[in-house]
Image (cartoon, rainbow, N blue to C red; front, top):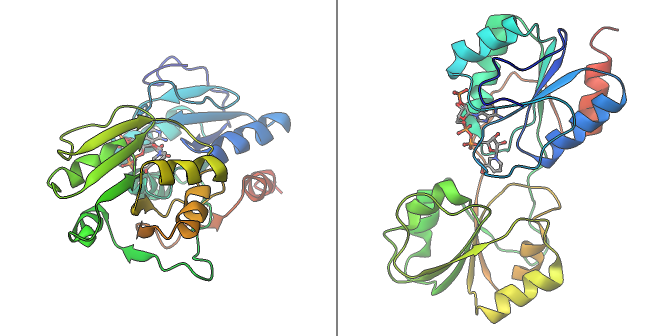
Length: 257
Ligand code: NAP
């Protein structure tokens, strides 16, 4: 593994998996098992990331031109963008860089969560809108939007926040808060207990989708907790997209057919 990719031994003709998600790790394992060479790329945001099978490079590429150059130098055969639905910049960069380098691109994107009967999520477009939506109506908030975004709530002084993060949050924090360090997957009974014991009245979450962090939504429904749902940024419109690692594996195996 390397921090800049320069000394990484990448097999020419490898598939580059842009990662940082469970689906990316699943795909790296599936392709490796099938004997298809891969290299996974992580941004380097988390101190102890869960590593996929196969070679891994860590750190940014240096924008669109840096990524296009890297694809060329490493003789990458195809790119699967399996990054998180809210990692909009790398997704846009991947679309532009693969076009520049004439390398096929697939987006692996897990489906968004949909409300069940009885759910009345308040959908907002971004984190600033989520902070506005609190509107003095929430007193005890579970905030699960990730360490990079907590500062958007720093000005909210009339609510207490339980801030759940993998690594310590970055930037200024709201005056009334407690940090809860943890990493999913989460389970319904524990999520239920967390909401009850902290007397949470509002959950703020990104619409990340996927089963690993979904139980908080079931627990919120069961406890009548208000849900402020930050909806996903727009995806580049022309990138072919699949929802599962297995479908991405099939796309890769059909590339040379
Ligand atoms: P972002 O805003 O879309 O990307 C910012 C910059 O980070 C990119 O321009 C790129 O730098 C670098 N980068 C991002 N993902 C990379 C990757 N997989 N490999 C190499 N460089 C990468 O991304 P973000 O929202 O900060 O997310 C960073 C990573 O965390 C992503 O890989 C994502 O899958 C994972 N993640 C994000 C979230 C979330 O809520 N955003 C949640 C869970 C996991 P250069 O321009 O220098 O190439």
